Amino acid sequence: MFSIFPFFCVCHVTMMVLSAALTALSVMSLLSLGYLSQDWTSPNQVEQPNHPRPHIIFIMTDDQGFNDIGYHNRDIHTPTLDKLAAEGVKLENYYIQPICTPSRSQFITGRYQIHTGLQHSIIRSRQPSCLPFDLRTLPQRLQEAGYATHMVGKWHLGFYKRDCLPTRRGFHTYFGSLTGSVDYYTYKSCDGPGICGYDLHEGERVAWGQGGRYSTHLYAQRVRKILAAHDPSSQPLFIFLSFQAVHTPLQSPREYIYPYRQMGNVFRRKYAGMVSVVDEAVRNVTYALRKYGYYKNSVIIFSTDNGGQPLFGGSNWPLRGRKGTYWEGGVRGIGFVHSPLLRRRKKVSKALVHITDWYPTLVGLAGGNVSRMDGLDGYDMWETISSRKESPRLEILHNIDPLYNAARHGSLKNGYGIWNTAVQAAVRVGDWKLLTGNPGYGDWVPPQMLGNFPESWWNLERHTEAKKSLWLFNVADDPYERYDLAERRPDVVKQLLARLVFYNRTAVPVRYPAEDPRADPRRNGGAWVPWEGDEENWEAFYLRKRKVKKQKRKFCKMKSFFRRLNFRMMSNRI
Image 1: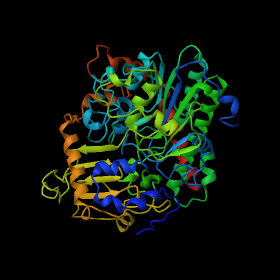
Image 2: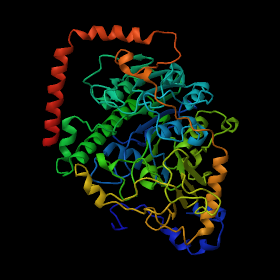
Image 3: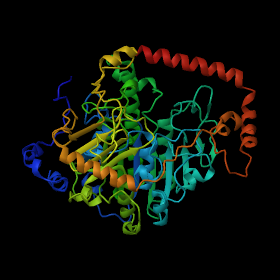
């Protein structure tokens, strides 16, 4: 058992004084009490903007853990992100989802997973699934408000039909990868042994010929080109910069890994180098915002998409759990807002914020009418973030997943006849958090602990509670989830179980179709592309592209092999 006083502490000291008084109160009372709980911004930059609607730049990283940024952990070097956050508003009670597709879907629709049919897992590359077509996305709303909308980077929201593509879901332009994970240099993506293909797209076409260029650099360069080509005074701009970093595979240019050479964990060393590349990319984008005249009237938002994976270098310490779990380490994210338009800057916000909140918040900033948008689960948080007004959000449904492996010891009886605790679910109401079913791996993993250790070492560190299927924590007093209060507070448990029942009544059926063999890149010219419901002959088009490269294939394969071999040898040495 590790110490409950770790290196970085997210505590709500004032709530500890109130904890005794809370015992006799209802959950609704708890909610209300819980809420009582270059120079980037030089003076000449805080002028009244010429344009009433701000330029919005939303930056998302992939698998970056809570402990993987400089202002949470001094071992990670992120001077740009640290400065932007310090001069803006840090969101220290900010929640995302535990894996990629759910977070991205909730950001772009403003709806919980149970209201989009994406409650279970991710959208895999061969699944005929994507965002529901009847939902208006965030970029579509911003287009209606007169914005030019651009996306650069990882999509991971389905592509089996062309109507699923980013350019059909609200983005005027798109440059990036459609699947969940690609090689940072070759843009090769695999979905099972031998099911591999090229995945880099320009609009609705495959962007051949980009191999060898590191994706984080490539994406930042594309954003700078967009900024240079656009007139900031004529039309407001929305850019969704969705880095694939710092998701596996762990790849980074050697010069970024070298400053972390003292780290004994090789995975952690490479991972930290990837974070540093992201920091440099954000610096270049921010510089371009200033250079081309956007900065004075801009809002920059930074967010992770889920918790880090300690098996591959990430760290959520001191939080419990990891990516893919509903413990705080899986769902509590890094987030901040930086903007000259903030009324109160250089602040730390403890207001409860969820990734669904960006949809109404950004539509509101763009001048859209949020009140007319039915079905949203998010709240407009701008006044809360900018002016520190009371937050409209009092609770979060983390998820209800009826397809996840049922907890062996869960039952309706264990849920007081209210809820079957075999079902994986998690909800937060005020300061209280309830988990049922199997929340996922629930240990606390300090940095440097694991990486290239043998599998047996994992089991030595496991925190197992084999017969449990229900947990209750006061995450204000106990943000590390070490003290389960379920048996001591059955009154609170029953009320939160009732909230799960309420939400479950509004859920739509889960959409998780079987994989389609027609998606195999070998049938589509070697690339991941839409394969269903199109009149255009995708296979013929991509085969023509493939033939152009055939003459050099043997030489290029050998050259590529030695390049990768050299990179691995050098990376492991440092």
